[in-house]
Amino acid sequence: MGTVLAGVHPVLEALRAGRPIERILIARGASTSRLQEILDRSRAAGIPLRFQARQVLDRMSGPTPHQGVVAVAAAHHYAAFEDLIPRSRLLVALDGVEDPHNLGAIIRTAHAAGADGLVVPERRSAGLSPVVAKAAAGALEYLPVARVVNLSRALDRLKESGYWVYGLDERGEHVYDRLQYAERAAFVLGAEGRGLHEHVRTRCDFLVRIPCRGPIGSLNVSVAAGIVLFEWRRQRAESE
Image (cartoon, rainbow, N blue to C red; front, side):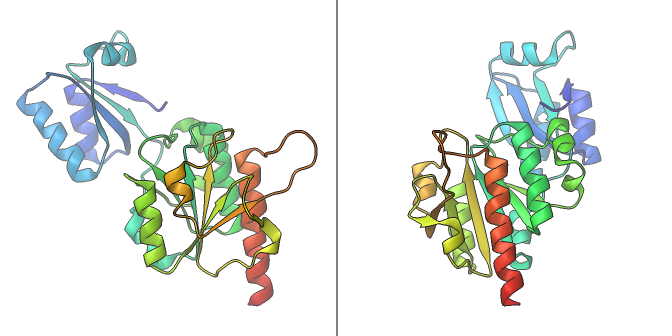
């Protein structure tokens, strides 16, 4: 988790200053004019809002009085998804990757492979916390990360814009290095153990797998990302 800001004044000042915010929690039933300003500014900035029981905010804020509002600060600003679409050739989308170390490692790998951006959902995803920034080893400064409300709709939008979508799945029909990838490609990776959600799987044009030897049938998601992304890069180098 990122830095927790508790109380109306700290949260409001962070919003006014444009500080990156991961999410804001409001106590159910809390209502003041200053809380309303926080709600309005959060919605205008596209920051996720969650209404929680007051006890949840109590635990997050510890001894600091929260006055009905807690914010979790992010380590970095999110990019706008629509801005990534026209200027990118290679995008990475994550479905349910909640481990911050894995997210940071994927950011680092994606940047090294020449990806133009990363797409994560608001829910079922690690945020851009200091842990993620450290694991990314500086790559977060160069690789834009966009956050979307609905990943399935985001994939539909990419397909409408000319991208081909490739989902990594250990049961996929296609072996990763026997498929000719499109010049504009989006690779979708799911959480370890659970894989892609069904509504995300159905958006993929191709499901690809990385064959593994031995009894363990899958790779760490950041390792899998590196394998397929560098294969895309290899194919592009050969065709250009």
